Length: 151
Image 1: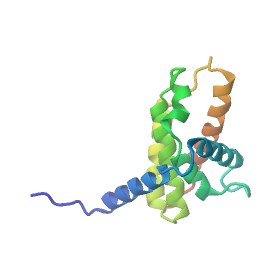
Image 2: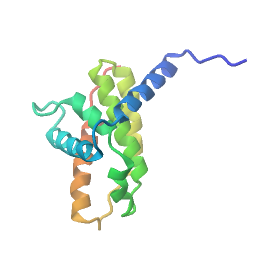
Image 3: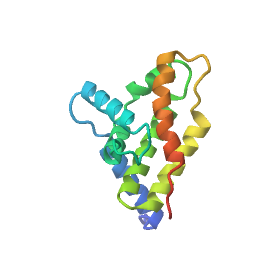
């Protein structure tokens, strides 16, 4: 007989999937979404606590990154799917932190950092345009790594 799991972890995991799914729902044209993401990421490059960084918008923007936007990284030999997955976990971590759910945020943060550290590495010979774009994502990941969450 099937019994649904009712542990706290299962509920948080289900909530995390719901958050990630809602963050991934794009509105408007894809070009507008890309433009919005670039603007939000640039505004948060100096840190989540900077006046210009709206972490709700950052979570939304990270959740809306598409496979097409990370595909150029794959074309130079990077694990673009791992990069995308890590950025989406980061979106969920930020969203949970904003909703004052530090334990759920920590689980998402841990997954994001683990995937990024194991699978995402910029090749030395990457073109400058790829290096510049990677630097933006990498600065967001540095901030995810440094998130202080008390669970």
